[in-house]
Amino acid sequence: MSDESPETTTALLHRQIFGWRHRITTSLRLKTSLLSELSGAVGDLGTYIPIVLALTLVSNLDLSTTLIFTALYNIATGVLFGTPMPVQPMKSIAAVAVSEIPHLTVSQIAAAGISTAAVLLFLGVTGLMSVLYRFLPLPVVRGVQLSQGLAFAFSAIKYIRYNQDFTTTTATKTTDPRPWLGLDGLILALTCLLFLILTTGDGNSNEIRINSNAPTTRRTRIQKRLKILSAIPSALILFLLGLILCFVNDPSIFNDIKFGPSKFHVLKITWDDFKVGFLRGAVPQIPLSVLNSVIAVCKLSGDLFPGTELSATKVSVSVGLMNLVGCWFGAMPVCHGAGGLAGQYRFGGRSGLSVVFLGVGKLVLGLLFGNSFVRILRGFPVGILGVLLLFAGVELAMASRDMNSKEDSFVMLVCAAVSLTGSSAALGFVCGIVLYLALKLREMDFCFWKSVSCSADEHESLL
Image (cartoon, rainbow, N blue to C red; front, side, top):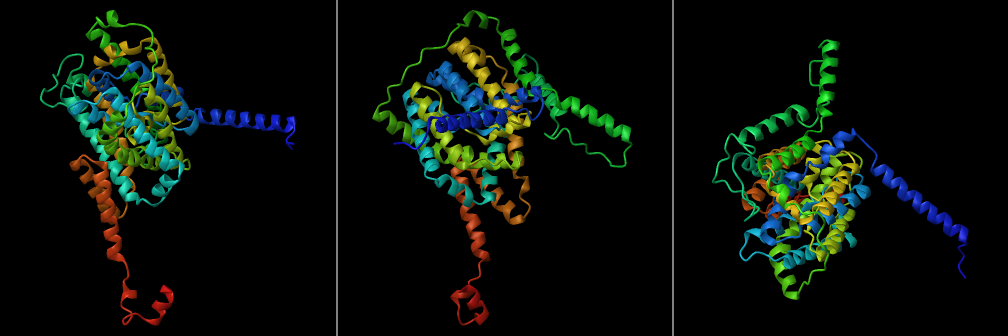
């Protein structure tokens, strides 16, 4: 006979409900202004839109399903983590899917996402991810972050300077310079860039860097101006401007819009799809997901939100569960990216409410416009995306500024250089680990190998 009475069961249920209510209210509590959270919500769209657009146009990805599932992911992660945890495409899988011949099919893309998710779920559940996170040298992690941030910045500059064609690849095309004039011209991109610099500064717009001997009235005047500027939802304004320019540039978009989402269906994934998806998509994606989607995200979260460093186990399990559900319905494989977190933080996101807003927006778009929303995305000014991506990349790269010693900076820079030139975070990571161990080996005391030259005191300390 059970010892638990109905009153005890009810009390436990009420306690659990109270615990979840407390978690939700804590995660969604405003830590800055509402407009800042809304602006931070669109801070990672510089990477999200180009990849989603390319997969939709080249690989026939179901945009409606992707919007709906990523919306649910955004809402769930915002509540569970309490930070602007991004939901980003798995970049290696996307790059292989649209740039290599033959292109990956939707089933093979899903198989690659499921395979990657299974590995990350295993690492998270067994605790191996926490072991990796605990023992990986910080300079190596900073090197991965620096390389990813600079890669974003380089792509952003190409977005701004040159016309792009995302219908054939996610890689940038640099053969056709962007014209100065026009609704997606260079002047528009540079104007948006100047607008973000004036409104957000270096990311710490509220800090006053003037002489302490300056008159109080001057300090007050500057502080007031910076407060007004920082309250402007700059990224949100640019995103809305981009949407307006889509319709201004091509009014026929109105005729192509069809309301309603696409029908959900479970994909038929064969063993051959799993074999191709794993070998071509998952193998290059797994090391990137481990390093950038889990370890770098947790490190960056601790830097941006001191005292609230995320659990590597929870983040790894989160990536696994998202894809083990959504990929079976044809949703795009996703992960948590350090670049997305940096972008959302850079433009004002400070709590889980930021990504919840983004999730609600995606959900409305997915349910209202469905797959016809790709018609709007196709006309979005790429120069504006480049400006958003540039600030996100720089914010991510600046996380490496805490490398104070020359040795740590040496390891970080070598890791970043190899990652950039080899186009592989895994290769840079391996080189960084080898270099770090070699430097530590150089400093080791090998006296215990030469017992003749060791003193008795040294022998005792070694024992």
